[in-house]
Image (cartoon, rainbow, N blue to C red):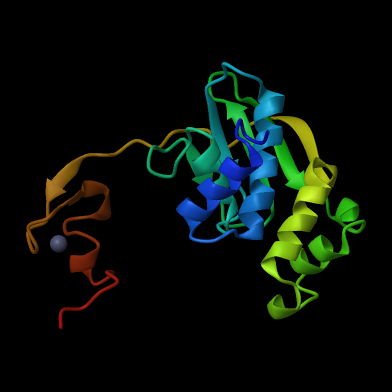
Length: 187
Ligand SMILES: [Zn+2]
């Protein structure tokens, strides 16, 4: 069992959600599984993920925390690590990929350290290695949150005088796009 699922279900859900069996997501599943076990049942856990790549999807798939509900925060540090913590007392566990241990699994080490071109290491082979490695390549530590634990609240809303769309007043007297800081142009 992994994240409360059979291996087949685990892999099926990853493929359905993410589009393919991304090794980072398979590995991430093992990390979430470990963090869930450490924090124990019955805890309302929020999550911090330390990379934008793959790992947020593992948290969204295998915990109730999603980007949209605000229970998962993603910091763009590109470190393969995540934390689950009790949002009431801020105590939690950080789980990370222990690079030293991955040296016993050259496929895993070479993949993570970008030492091998993608086409030289087929997905099935790498995922097989990840299953062999499992938790043996993960480290964990009990931690207490010192930052990023606040759930962000929506501020006051107004109607933009230029485009007529609702926008947060903290952006100023017009919306971000109408101030020329948008990401699109009419065509
Ligand atoms: Zn506007």
